[in-house]
Image (tube, rainbow over all chains, first blue to last red; front, side, top):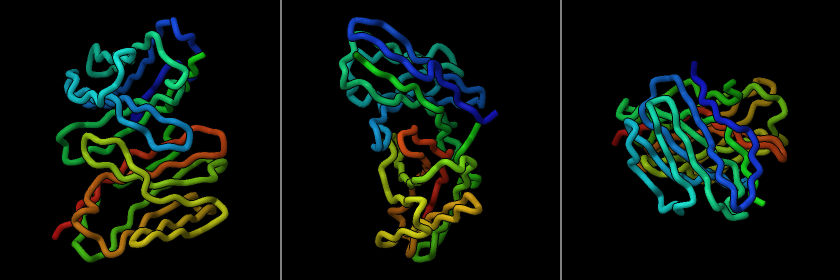
Amino acid sequence: DTEVTQTPKHLVMGMTNKKSLKCEQHMGHRAMYWYKQKAKKPPELMFVYSYEKLSINESVPSRFSPECPNSSLLNLHLHALQPEDSALYLCASSQPFAGTDTQYFGPGTRLTVL
Amino acid sequence: DQQVKQNSPSLSVQEGRISILNCDYTNSMFDYFLWYKKYPAEGPTFLISISSIKDKNEDGRFTVFLNKSAKHLSLHIVPSQPGDSAVYFCAATSWGDDMRFGAGTRLTVKP
């Protein structure tokens, strides 16, 4: 199984809503990532979890709150978002310190903030 | 369902020689292809792209070749330099659709 799954595929939310994005992998990878991607632009790194601990936070606003409940799951909790947060949110996973940091990307969640 | 595949997780070449990174795709609707370069703890940065109406695009030391009938593209780096050492991602998209990424290939260029 070389798949990273993300749910939901699409999400529309208002600025006062609270929602969560979910990511799951069963490849035994111990590093997981959240990226934000605007149309036709490369993904921007948001957070990195290594062995279930947050290792990198790229100055992301607090309205985005990541959570890694176990080695297979990664969540991104959303609260009080702005319309400019509308984007494709990609999850990825890799095996840290394996001599390669090739990453498997999920299909993404298309988020629209009204 | 991996629509974009990079079957070589790693590649090692000598400085000054050619690096060839390969990518295969399954979705015939893809019409735009990109290569990204990624350093550790950073997001991917755009390197070079090619539209499906072309079979070659060149930018300095980097050339991307597209073989639509084989659903295959490759990135050639000539001459390779130690600073080229990074992970390279292949990506594909069709107009108005989301971009799909391969798993990446780690290139190591040895001095």
